[in-house]
Image (cartoon, rainbow, N blue to C red):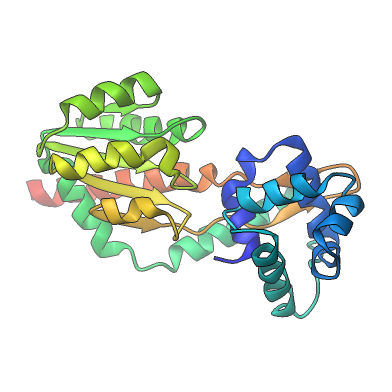
Length: 263
């Protein structure tokens, strides 16, 4: 996973200071590639420790690996990042989301989506899981499937997670929406699911997440890695938009599965 993909995935977890560091690096990567951690901290108007925390937030082992990743990413580009040449801000935003949808369309997911549709139909207990903003994606799947007379629940807070972990068995299908595939949030639940033979479907942008080894089926979706940036702000496109969109794709596949089953 390259540097910009990591920022895209972990952006919502960054502090205000870390977002400022991020904006400075995206504007001028040489801050990192040509300077020590102390010098880079000074150029970003922050400290050595803040730079190191930022690197580790992106799951790099330290500043050296972080520096290497940035250098590797930008050396593979013809030029340093440029703004989209377009007439309006609205067009820039829409074009960036379009790029992500185009990448999603090019993935070969047909067989897995058909299999997931059958799983949703056959399992006794189906739960859609999401924490924070990802809860909207989980709820979207629940509401979308109401149209096909499929009723199940969204699990969206820590209390529900605790109770769910206690009652898991082989009759449960868990569909997890998580941009970063956070082990802090889901690892214990997935370990319990594996022990109890529950079926786990993970939908994430992080193809390095350790949760994948505890999942029965994993969808790796493209992350929206472009940014809108001026002198004052850095605005990262929210990857949960893609998760929300993908929940609708699942519901359409389920609808076609049910129609074919009735035919």
